[in-house]
Length: 392
Image (cartoon, rainbow, N blue to C red):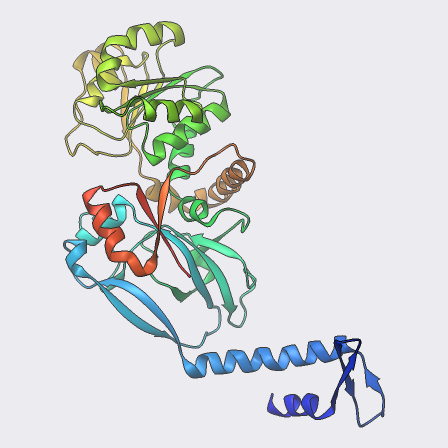
């Protein structure tokens, strides 16, 4: 590498003409000039090798948020700086672009989530990264590709890192980074619940609570795209109707509060017909009304428990309407090998819907990674919007 660089520098001639610089390479063997394209290519190869050499000589450092024990995230998470080693065969280096802070991430640090990485562990799971360097024999990715984790508990709260291709799924780099970072969770959850439980036709109704949550907003938009109607329940709150107005702008057909639903459900389903599918993220008393509204042999699918209360199901709905009560956990679906190709096709479809403007990103607040402590504290207290960490 040093010899090649010396040859280039020894024989180059800088010619200035009309205030523009042009470079040529003179070879002593032939006495001829070689075009600048050859010069540029040779110089690029030398300087790329030199850059890679000095990068690892100097040591590339990754700033990470790590926990060595389970507990309160504000207490057990701490900063760690880790020096990245040179790449081995089959490895790649990435730079983090964006990473979200989700309830499941907090639960994982607390030790109450089913996915438990070996400790000490880097926190966070949902993210998007850019491939910066390839080790020997890596053919699945190119430098500059964007990727998301293929497995849970990836460890997203870090500036950069090293991994192997089987832990990543390539995504469209034209997506906004904030959307790409959540592509594999909230949009995928909404998509699978609408597709996997009931064969819904055009005009069929879908009932959901927590309609203004991130998943709830995506259910509204995807249902509209698929040709379904949505009845959306939100909490009783005095916001001047702003939440309901926003959800209608996403395509919601009906938006009602908990109190209004009790009063208006008969009228609504008299117009639409009873729903075959109800989606629950709240649990507790809310499920009494969801289950009671279902059509015969309808399905109540639970994917969250924001109230931290047990489901309440009316006996009559089970006995006389033979409804089914089911649970959905995306991580379980993702990790089944038979679903991998279907997962990639789903992510491609969701990406295309986003790029075409048919799927809007739920509202997040961008927070620089250096302000992680503030972002975590506000996530724990529920202050403001959901937080998206962004990296320089």
